[in-house]
Length: 112
View 1: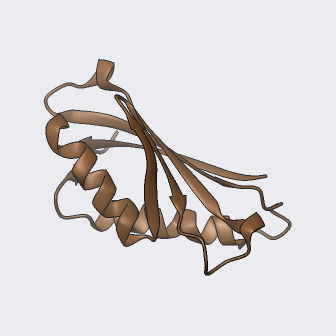
View 2: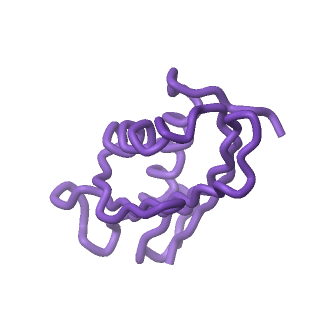
């Protein structure tokens, strides 16, 4: 199973966060399939890639650590694909999500 994680501290109002995360995920070709307080699960939209390579994303929002509108986020990008090559489909999607996070204009990444 391929699995890649990253953590970010973003400056954004908590009320805006679900909409912004949906925008990022949708722009990368993912759809939200489950949403709760502090957690979002999304999956890659089927049809363009083999079923075994489909990627899912878990976003953990640590609301207990919010200070000055700085929200800690942990992203877990995973698939059932065996990561036999470093540049596999899951890794490509992980990089795409990271790039989108860094370029999103509605929030600011906070250096940690």
